[in-house]
Amino acid sequence: MKAINRIVMTLAGLLLIVAAVLKAHQILTEPVISKGFWESWLFFVIQIPLELGLGIWLVSGLFKKPGWLLVTIAFAGFIAVTMYKAITGQESCGCFGRIVVDPQITLFAMDVPLFLLLVIFRPMGETFFPPPWPDPLHFIVVAVPTAFILGALIPILVFNKPPDKTEKYVVIKPDKWQTQLVKPKDPPGNNEAPVIINPQIDSNYITIPPAEINETDTDSIGELVPIDIDINEDDIPEWQLMLKHTDIAGELNKDVKIILFYHYDCPDCAVAIPLYSLYSREYAADETIQFAFIEGPPYGPDEEKPIPADTTALVGKLDLSRDWIFESPLILLLNNGSLVQWWQVEYPEIDELLQTVLSAQ
Image (cartoon, rainbow, N blue to C red):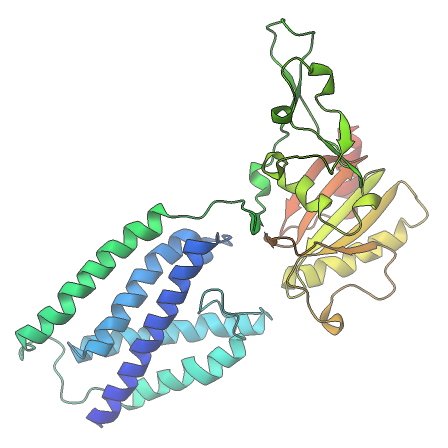
């Protein structure tokens, strides 16, 4: 019984160490989108050292009974979280950082079996608190390196948070969106404050940010110019960058467009898309209002796409030039290429959408 308990606790500890290392790699190399505290960057910063510390504790064999109790409670929590993700149809359990593992595989191949083994093969004959005390050398050899590793890991995680935009990925944060183009109210030399204007987008043209304009060439600010000129995409608002990198960009620059960005495995998208497809059919005769569904990578299999086969809405994809990191559904309301409003996770009904358009005109 003791030998089996030792094996089970070692396996559980190694699994925790691997999971903590992979999650640490993830949050050091790509941003984390927060869907509440339990999936936020801050929670990962707290979870990773705890998970790593518990894993080392179990492998070390020190203080077996309290270690067993903590890991049993931890795996009970893992089961609850993974079961929720499996039921809601999420693509990955999120247990192993960037490695995608089906929640059902994690649940039935790891979490449940290890939990049952921990419950069955308990550390019999062990006391919860010492005595007996562990061998001092054994304790020092484990405790000192562990304290050093955890003490170094926490500031590394805290002070090396990845940027929101790189050449490899873009984090879409609508709450930070704002227009970035300015145009003087009067000719140069006047000290009056500039006025913010909305950026415009076209399939072949894009608005030049002020940073790309010569200080004396004030008439060019806000002018539409070909997109193949040398423009730093860091100066482009994320919503404009997303539209630029879709395969239907040329159809989004005029009239009223209601655009829903989605992921194929997003539960909320699976509810919102049929509703918006219905709205699209209802307003099919009105050529000034059109809906669009744009899929964000990774793309799902055709049989799992939530778009109705008979939809009258535009259908497109974000390209693979970068990883587009956003919480879906993300809905943009455009009027002649200008951003009027956005909604994230929420999906307003048609009356609210149309009222928003009217109030902006």
